[in-house]
Image (cartoon, rainbow, N blue to C red):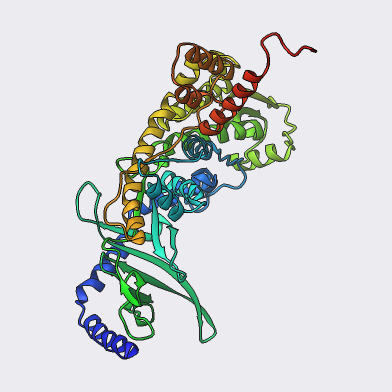
Length: 479
């Protein structure tokens, strides 16, 4: 009887899907084509490229005009060093290490509920946050997809932002209306390798999959219906397909404008790459010097250049001509180029809100005040990321509560613990002063860089105190 009912529901769902408006398919196809060529997606891919140090300078070419054709052609005879620098990668790694390398903190008055939340998140959620941090930094937004596996456990999947097309209900991008998640599948047909694109349309009620082969988009029944013909929703509960009640995708944003970090430093990094490459060209290539050639006959300039590069230059033996070759001047000012590159480095750190590393100003062992100044830009960027991740965690709690079947719950405070470098000697002195002033043990222990777990440290202190109470004031004496 149960199977018959499921088959009956499946038939109704299939008929409903067949009558589904064609406008949805048109919408999905239109959004897909628009997104694929959008500046937003290009910027995401650029962020990934620059993190992998695949900078634009790698594709740089030099040209000359062909005297015979009058056309511009690539000049392979000239030095063309392409020196990409990993400044962007270093800045992203610094940011992620600063904000996400330490364990996150959850606090709640209801300890039993907090334990359930921590159990639902699992032991590897810190690593998920780390991945989301990289996604958000390089692409503007990291997308987390909660789902229920076959064993009934809550799981989380990170979906690449360049494969997500969100539709928001509001201008502030706080509530999702739908998500199009697309991915490619390779297959063989008639001995040829081909690619089809699956487009999953997620709403608060369920998911419908469409597949595009060539220019044709059609409903994929195999991915949209189960074996009984029932329309797939979000997950199965009590033998029935059930929805989360919300679109099961959570946006972990990089900043308020959802832009990747590369947006703010790309042109400066390109300028730095170009300047360093030009200096390298100058050092390598002899033609960066201006030569005065006398007595070389009627040969054209290109022939003279080629002979200079080969190291062979035969002058005409004409007694009436002044036969000589001399250097007139240098094109590149190395000192000016060096100063320009140093200024670009400082500009990149400032624009990218990185860590100031002017050790000549702060010394090899900066004080607490100096370290705060060095990390001032990073603190601004990390504070914004922390706030964005706190908002995303509030959305995540909704799905955890649905999974736990909890309608009302206590507030859970989520926070990232910054991994700021400190002057240890100064920190320990300050903690001792705080202790002597009577500040609570929890407070000064939480500020001590040598303490990882305040509760464990308090137990250790209590044990030490108990041992000291057993030792006589004048020491141990023989009776």
